[in-house]
Length: 370
Image (cartoon, rainbow, N blue to C red):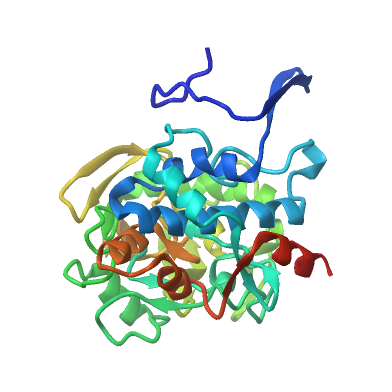
């Protein structure tokens, strides 16, 4: 019997296609998109936001699924959408009557920008700020190709950017700041890493990242000029210092410098930075007082590195961060809180996605295919 890790035994509408692929059993569920949502929406969002919260998630999830299908990301594998966070979590929890009602009352509604179906990204909890698409996803340089996914300020403060290290440090170390989703246990968190743990993690992780993305792992050549690095499995030597040298508007690290006893390296891109400084397992202290044990990844790319020095090198670091997830698009925790404050699902969707329209799916598909 198929069971999820949480013990739930999933049920499936539609048809199941089962076959062998690369010596593994592959199961593809052929299903109507509205029935698909009945097991995506409750898997992605708790019922805390009531019917309006479920409506928000229904429209966002329907839009995201359609953008995946039209984009053909998984077409070479013979399916349209993955059932994990690679796409959207599907059939992780049972459906319910309120969820089904929300899906039916928003039937066929999707989000468009300039007549095209949008990439309706969403995530669990913000740090108080939302990032523009190109701050986190950097396949395109120098401009944001998805302007509906833009910088957002969810706090009660007038914050236009925190790109400087001083402003970012002040923001992420402030556990009293109020935002739409500041009641989330992941709104603020911190991780302490001693020197031996840090040195081990960086030495192991940087080589793995170098194999995957060699163009964005660089070493200092002359003055402030960097060239493509040459790394070996032995690592990079003993770390003397490590710091973020460039941040985006919302505080996401864009470049990190690592100084060792023989070289200086520059790491480019938030996913590379986050991966390289993450130990294999660590503990997180959250704003709620809850301590999470044996975590395998930093909760978000929104963080600062606070350093403590010994006589000749760094002694330890504390990573102060906020939020859970990539931070682009809609914060689900904030959306539920807005729903509970009396906002309609249309108002909430327009709050997170800039200059969008809610359109019928058939009309939107026709426009997107033109």
